[in-house]
Image (cartoon, rainbow, N blue to C red):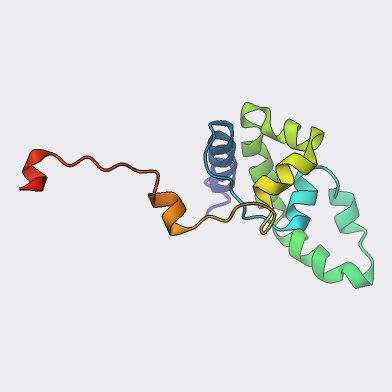
Length: 121
């Protein structure tokens, strides 16, 4: 369902827009997924894995259609090209544990709630 409705492309577009507009870093990908996005791990490398790497091959191979859509979305604002050019900079933005983690307070604290007079009384 998510694949046919292009939800992964939309997720990539949202990540690109958030990052390029100074929003919170989406530290939610594994290092293997980031290696694929940065161009270090190709589809042929996934397909020609050794027996030892069979688990990784199976894991990445099952999500390849989603990765392709995510890549398409990350092309927004040229972010994917920048990831290929400067992977060490972007690794802290995308890989779990490499940058700042998202917490409930980090999402809520920036909001300044303004109540109308009717809500205050």
